[in-house]
Image (cartoon, rainbow, N blue to C red; front, side):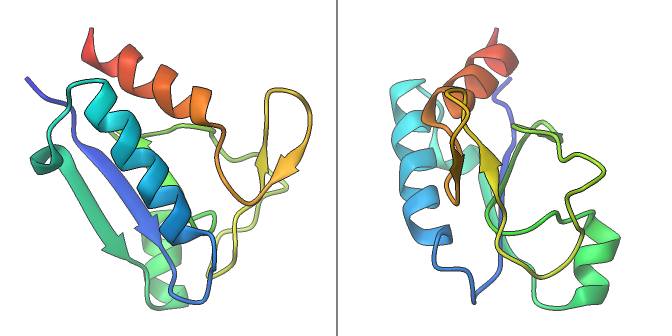
Length: 107
């Protein structure tokens, strides 16, 4: 069974398009078809609260965030900050974290 990959984004965040491109590349490399991807725009603070949206872009594989947000990460319409494995802060998720999440959920 293919995993369901969710990509949640907010239109005012400039990072969502490059992050979606990276996600699609990694899904293809992992042999996961586009039909397993759900791309959802988060359009209101109420929706962000309801969905537990810690900012744009957010990637979840089978409901699990590729980098679970911490208590200091706000829920709402904002650009997300990722902590890369080398310690740097980035507006884009670490490509290796995406690979690991996809691999971990596909067997």
